[in-house]
Image 1 (cartoon, rainbow, N blue to C red):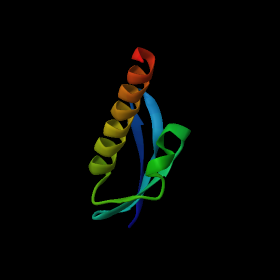
Image 2 (cartoon, rainbow, N blue to C red; image 1 turned 45 degrees about the vertical axis):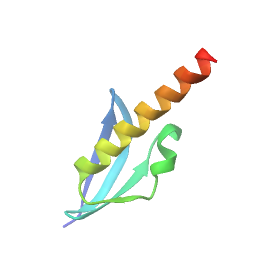
Image 3 (tube, helix red, strand yellow; image 1 turned 90 degrees about the vertical axis):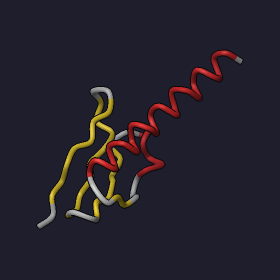
Image 4 (cartoon, rainbow, N blue to C red; image 1 turned 120 degrees about the vertical axis):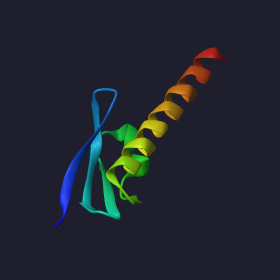
Length: 68
């Protein structure tokens, strides 16, 4: 049975993952997470961790541009 799980990062919806254990596909709901759209993950938690790391990396790039 498949399930859909909302992935939230820092209070914002990053997207959803749909699937069953061992195969969850990420669907972006915000342009900031479009690079993850369509990727498959072994678990919803793996998708959440990847989205959080993606957001952190984006924030660091923004900080680097401001400092330059």
